[in-house]
Length: 327
Image (cartoon, rainbow, N blue to C red; front, top):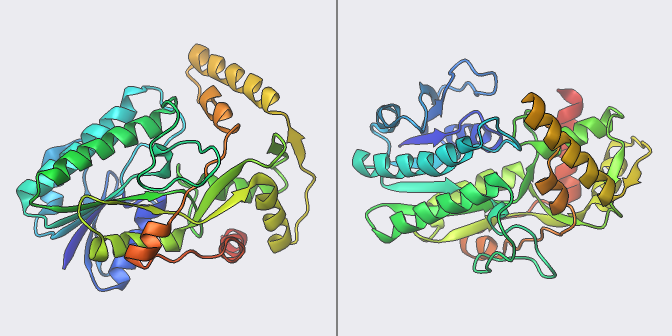
């Protein structure tokens, strides 16, 4: 069976193409540059030059494909042109859906994010919970709007389409734009990460890459069209995160608890710097604000309906650190 993966050089997309290839699928790997160093080489993977913003290239890529995994997205913290988020994440997704319908594609899995729910107050969020805050982060806002495109498209029928929502993904893979956890762990291992935000008790949900990829396959095979599934992991505080990295790696570096007010002040300075110079900021105020809240998510629906499995955080971090140390 032929399948197309958009965003095939991304942190999730590249591992997904490999997994599909190893399962015997003929995989078309859509990317803007077929010489990209993150593109995996395999006899069952065919690199295809294309861009989700150009329907012609999408049409060529989807020829003969029965399934599409749409993982491509603008996941950067900052873009020089803020409109790029909407163009890629919303218009690009609409293009994928409409071209797929015309190309005879039977099934689509759309990769969204747990960021569409944003911060949590007390209990972990599940698929039917409403968002409790605004959308100051462009990536989250446009992924939410893209989900609305998918939802409306699914209501029309004709194509089986499922949405998956990974949380903060980590694991064995290169430093792409979305692999922020890997960059953080690598910096700690090299003694270049020096702080923990606030008191370190803020919690985020960490999903192991292999689990997330397996969740994509399960959603394609066992999901219910029109539904969405959180593909998460364990809820871990910053303190426990770095405690685990220390215990697994055997490396102990002194970390300072940096007050959130100081981080917020620095983020405003970085924003001003980028506005005046056009240079990429290291951090932005909307992300500093996010550090005040937990991000807890429940994968119970995926576990029950898809057979989703969560790798224990310590086990996943062992594999991640081994990969980083050998890279």
